Image 1 (cartoon, rainbow, N blue to C red):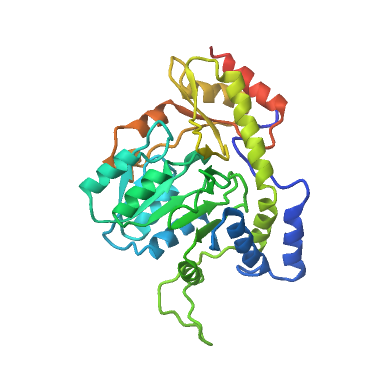
Image 2 (cartoon, rainbow, N blue to C red; image 1 turned 180 degrees about the vertical axis):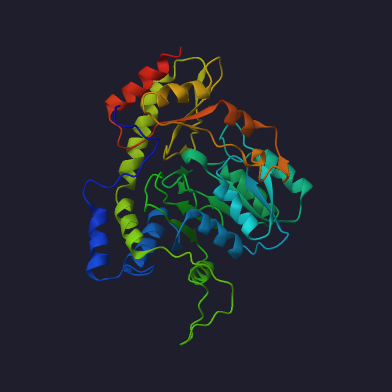
Length: 369
């Protein structure tokens, strides 16, 4: 069987930047959850995206959890959340004993629909926070969403787990709301194998998040804890990987865009195929190249024919309001996210793919028409 073509797998730098930082951690015997790499990764990441402060954490999920806590979300509070996302966006709402209300997408962005968000505020005026997600590297329509949140005096949390390097009108996604979160899971555009980052221009809140993430250990000679804490800090070794990966982020975005444009050139003329929306104000990172199918050929047909050739693909996210665990919670929308899920498909978008791999994928897909 031919070597597998992945959807999006880890891609270490050719220059070996990651090993330089990892080696330094080993040479200094500093492989604990804190250290120089963690401190520098936070500084370098904040500088890269244009934020005042950052906290390196064990996962993007942990970052969302602490963002909700920093925003004051607690038991019984309502949190509006994009429905078209991975469960890691919504789970921390439950961690805080809060109540999610899921907001539909629109076709223009595939992300949170501002009209649905406004309708949600009309129905649920007492809201503690809003979580907007930038799926697949596509930015939500942030001007309108920010305006709505400010009008209702509600903090906005951006789940930019999939959109590191994406710009909205010249500004990095994740830096537009009060808090931004990023993921460095193995399939993301850069990876630390596992990890996340919480950013904000509120340096005091980020300092507090670091405190919570380090078991809320008080500054005492003995071990003392006055607040509930979490074991959420990033390892010094993984932070070293992150520092090296950050150096090649721009290269990865260039390759992701090349992959998307290759697919669009080769498949864009097929009437039944429509590509994810790229707006003039949006400079995506093209994390995954996604399409919708509007004819007799269905996403499962494409996934199965690719899988026979050892090529990985994936459905579009199944909306949270359709998930067994979350389906009893409120949902505001017109089922756009459901239609995207039923018709959508993520094509292999691995930055290690060569032209021959891309040609193979395209050739296989074209057999279905």
